Length: 202
Ligand code: AMP
Image (tube, rainbow, N blue to C red; front, side, top):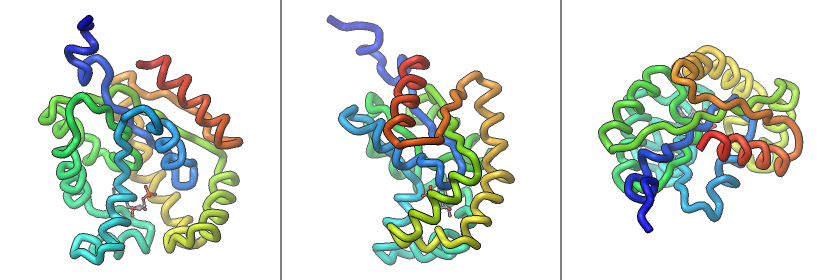
């Protein structure tokens, strides 16, 4: 039987955007959510780290920003997302993780999604107290050895988030798309809260 959802899945559902400060677990939670669901996890941080590992020209450029805890310029970030979007069928939902991070990127994403016949379904705002973010980031620095998890770079990343990414929340709040999820506590509990929020808003 063909339902309206089957006929036009991209319009019936929409993509998911994860917003939250560094260390809140966006990546972990986005991966947990897409597991077994057939959604695509699109992390701009992962795309940049992949370019860095492959020593591409884009990787060299991105590294200079990543290492300082600064954002890669909007045009570069939007173009890497645009390239990735070409490979994703319209009927496959996307969980955007770490994109958009500036108002200019959010506006560019609106245009890109229109171009690709997609739309934003829900924006998940994951939040946790600063102490917990700092504790997780210092744990990750030891476990994964990420160059941008050192205390100085972490402080910079948190400041950049407040200054440049917080306004992105209002961009989506105006459209009634934001669902706040408490990102404090054990990973599995956060995943449960997240699934609830996504189910309720789908
Ligand atoms: P993440 O893995 O999402 O924490 O991203 C790691 C780093 O990649 C960030 O600190 C930025 O330097 C860069 N980055 C990731 N996503 C973006 C974005 N949307 N805009 C600009 N820079 C980004």
